[in-house]
Length: 543
Ligand code: ACM
Image (tube, rainbow, N blue to C red; front, top):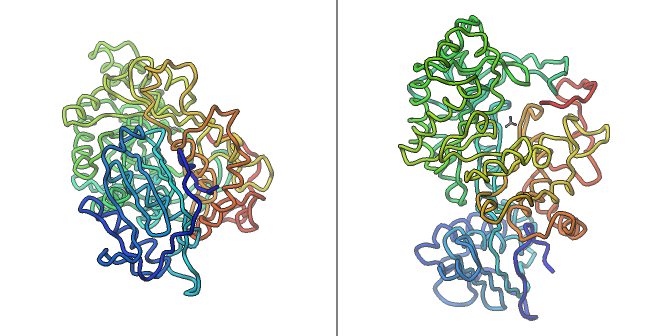
């Protein structure tokens, strides 16, 4: 019995002597498999200190090859088969993705020490017992969203998260790049977006109702070359980066940088600052032609940087107060023949749906984009529960299921007083394991619109990597299994078996240097109430 997470579809194989990875082991890889061979050398080679040279002689071999028929045989273009015997490790991938996932599985079979970056002893032997694994993902969208707007994560930190995703066979990185509290991507034609919008003077500390601020500037952004590097690094790991520019709400940082983007007849937008608190800012974009042209400019640069089919335009939590009060906006609603502010939001989103479609891309937005009519071709990230996703799938739109009640990893992991920042619902490892992306209400045809699932990491309460690790892990491991493995209905899932396998997985996370929440609760320094060293009273929901 293996301890693999996510669990593969089938595990079998003969009894026998193990495969031994040693100085004589060589990698045989055809042209399409060179990338995976490079990755194996860089990871397993570094952890073991073994050369893993290209195959010449035949002493001991890892064979990497593309076997397209596996796609039909195992039901997915991402499928792989891994066969280990005394003489060889053979990884067949239906395509390059499958080959990569097979290599990931092989690394897990070598044990936690294979996840280190250098050998800790030259004494040990590296063995894998004989096994045959046939495996393929349940969903094609296995996502993680990281909010780098509320708290910036350095480029190195992002690359590290891409590695952590790859180790869990996740394949979509939803990059939440802009929000009220910061703009994180260089846009050459609008330099103030990062000059002004990428940092804030101070930061609310803790949840929205906390009376505390951290009185120091916070910020950062990725240059376009940083983004190119991130996208290329992700692609080497078969991860697609889906960028999000959140409009027309969550835009205070952009309005601070370019005050003409705001509702200037309602407020003096020149006096705004990049927001230092949490919640829903009332400062939203003015739905003018100028705003549309501005964001077309932003998206033009973005399309150059991100090759992904989907581009995320946010669309969530757009406060309508300013639109209701603004004579200019009301005149716009009338001019466009729209019924109300909800339809105005749909018109705004619809504009970018058409704009992106004309350039061969597809729009995806949070489920609020359903209100007032969903633009044709748009896909939905269903976050306020399942309802938005169900409505969208029934209307023939693609859906990514990421209900906050289930897979918002900023939410607390335990009801105990020791949780570092106790916001929103308790969602334990087991709760996440029992998350089902396809609601039973959907017919098979409708369910086919569920592209997959995504865990979302909002960082209002996570001011550094330690906090992000703590909130994200171990729950991301359970999530990965939900997104990848053929699990039974939630009530029938064997959580005891997951816990058994987690014992090995914690060692793997330790080897990777992940500051996860231990099963026994937070460690003393993880309990810390935060950088100010002061407790935060109360525990209202963050949203
Ligand atoms: C969201 O949590 N506002 C998408």
